[in-house]
Length: 462
Image 1 (cartoon, rainbow, N blue to C red):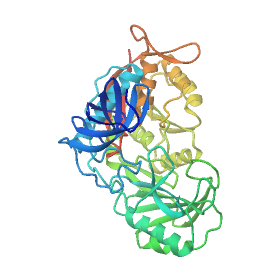
Image 2: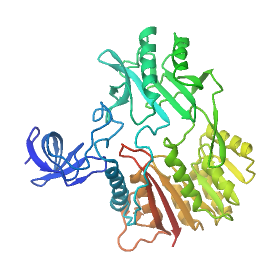
Image 3: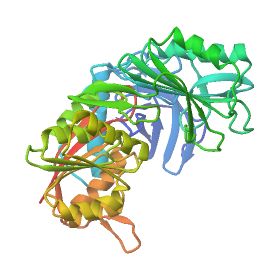
Image 4: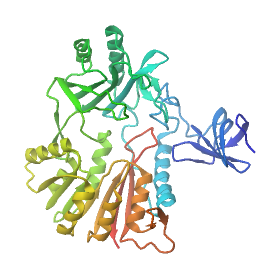
């Protein structure tokens, strides 16, 4: 039986859901980060739990053809990326298989999955940078959290972000040094600076500095440094003194710029602020939204659930007879209303509230509507899924950034998962009797170099 600190030679047989290599030895399955299919290596066992063990590569004996040199010096220490050691063509194959295998394993859904749609930009694609600021061993650090921790890995640049990321990080560090400011310590709750967040909209930027104190010295100096980095930007101070993992507090103070900027995409002009949700990869987002809108007919009514600021709802409204957008965040709902007015979309109707509350009565009124579900990572509320199953809806479009919750939700809609009396979801024995069937599954590589992917699924009523 394997023991901690054992060193052995193994061959990687496959890639796991987190991008780690999987090998087997004497009946034990080993999970080994940064280990590619077909590679042979000497590995050291770090932990053994039953028939599973966790190990690290000590010496790579036979590298795979698809192994490449990571672009980031802190890759494997930072938790932001998991796949920089993997050639991009292999990343796409991995994500295609990940979606297919997760749907089958967790949801009991057997479906043909199209090859993952590539991102034209393999690096430098993110339009949003969000960095924690803290202390490690008494030293101020700016970087990203290590995998499964809140330990900040200090960094000077990040290759999946644009070129402006490096000078911004340098400016934050210089600001702290010159003005005697400290990063926030989550244990002692000391220090002034918690996060720096930047959103790019074309050639304009929204910069937010999250602080644990209401009064911050030297802020004019920080703005002076930012003037050399960004051609046009708005700057917010955000106050957050809560013991929480949520980045932003409730209070935003605008110190420079208009606070929101306009952008045009897919023929729709919209505005975005510091806390507006937008997909981080503009090129892939355009492909994804265009493909989703293509599923709708010109005479159809569309109900867009989890609509955010209304961009995709507006795209449907521009094409279709009617489009409803349901959103629970009041700020996003108000932005959707302004978007409707700015684009003259009289057939766009923005509804404020939870999807599980607003959708059921709307389904009774719009029985033939095309339903679009683009939920957060946690997936769709079960009551909303039950309402869809009981409705007359004939076609559903789902967008998901989490294959695991997508598998669960599809399992409920197709009937491959059945709810027990105590609410537990169990694999259906025999034929799935849910009202919907999967027509197509298309992954999109919204997040190159990471284990994450976005999926677009079309379902129709049986």
